[in-house]
Amino acid sequence: MRDLRKFYIDGKWVTPASAAEFPILNPATEQQIGTIILGNQADVDHAVTAAKAAFASYSQTSKEERLSLLRALLAETKNRFEDLAQAMSLEMGAPISMSRDAQADAAVGHLDAFISALEHQVERETLDNGDILLREAVGVCGLITPWNWPMNQIVLKVVPALAAGCTCVLKPSEHTPISAAIYAEIIDAAGFPAGVFNLVHGDGPTVGAAMSRHQDINMMSFTGSTRAGVALTKDAAETVKRVTLELGGKSPNLIFADCDLKDRVTASVQECFYNTGQSCDAPTRLLVERSCYDAVVEIATRAANAHEVGDPSQEGDHLGPLFDRIQYDRVQMMIRAGIDEGARLVAGGPGKPEGFDTGWFVRPTLFADVRNDMRIAQEEIFGPVLVIIPFEDEAEGIAIANDTPYGLAAYLQTGDPLRAERVAGQLRAGAVHINGGGFNYGSPFGGYKMSGNGREGGTIGIEDFQEVKTLHFG
Ligand SMILES: NC(=O)c1ccc[n+]([C@@H]2O[C@H](COP(=O)([O-])OP(=O)(O)OC[C@H]3O[C@@H](n4cnc5c(N)ncnc54)[C@H](O)[C@@H]3O)[C@@H](O)[C@H]2O)c1
Figure 1 (spheres, rainbow, N blue to C red):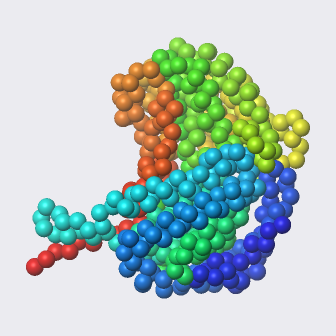
Figure 2: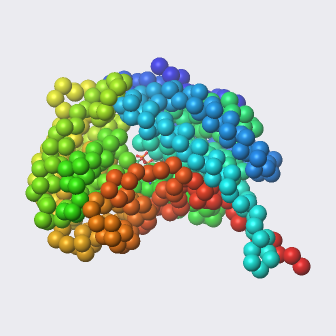
Figure 3: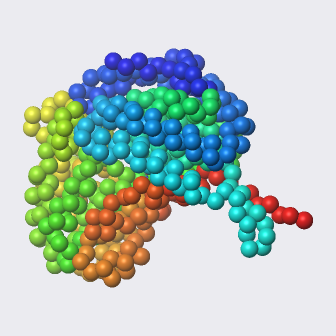
């Protein structure tokens, strides 16, 4: 049992002002594995005061000084790599192999890419008109992250903030505080000055809202649901903060008959179910050219049925549980909604997989003959549930792909390189993955439409945490 009832503020582990305890549960066993305190306004004030005081000197550090701190952070992250992987497997149910290969790997990969981006960034440049342009730290930043990719999201915010010379207060998801607490220890060991990074646990309506409304926070960087992102934006409006948002998705995956169907469809199903379907950019709508529709349904069904669920502490490529009961109930509700709306269930379905009565395990589920106006095609399910929708031709495929309030990612599979570029250019999404092309550390990540604004990762990710100042000389 982990006792996480302290916050990291001003370079020390301190006892919070709040006494509200909150249990941390293992989603595979439903057992309590730790306790945190949900902070209050006084805790937020304490952390913001520390961050504001530290900003005065940290924002004036040179790029070289910050690079050397980030290199120390990289070394410490590598030292604690296994601790991070084990923590995320325990707190959100990522199978340990995947937790190492992807969840913990993100802490190293993004940081490496940010170091390289900062090395190359021009902080002072002369414009054609003779004016000088400076890039400076935006100020004290409030960072709020979700539970589904805990370290990935933390590193995508904390590192660019520190790289830019900002100071920050992190509020991780109250459901995944263990990896966040380890990350605070890593930052401490790397030698960042006191107050530059602060960690406060808490829930959204109390700590999250107190941060968004805080007079002394200059920017909020948020990843989570569109619902919470909208609430945060309204809270931040009074103090005219910069707000960047990484929100939900319902990403289309266009399958054209000229692709290698067996390979691409099998990989597409695996990608949708990865992290038990709990990824904002998962390809959750499989849009299939009519001429190959029956073949695709057959291949996808076989691929879905090949997925096994299992204990996250075991090595292997099985799926873990969903992260908690609320998520389990929501996925069950959406599977039932799909059946009620008349979609054809071809794999999985309601209930738990056989032999998994304890833990929030679900059956990898596939629906065929789905219409894009059904709930299961429009709403983010956040579980291993894939819907298959036919289209007649390229134009209709693109229209269905774009017929969503979201625009985080899109995927397309085709053997025709000209078509790949032509279609990608018409998809309203922040990223288009072509024929299995994966995300690379250092590239920008973010959404169009209700998937958010701003971009995380690499140079553009650092710029989100910078102000631009122009010097005009007389
Ligand atoms: N676009 C991306 O980069 C990305 C990445 C991962 C997850 N997500 C999205 O995150 C969601 C899943 O995460 P979740 O269930 O933790 O989301 P959530 O919105 O419930 O919570 C996310 C974070 O916001 C906080 N929060 C909740 N209400 C708040 C409020 N009113 N003000 C301030 N903070 C508040 C929570 O405490 C948590 O730390 C999905 O919608 C998923 O698509 C997006």
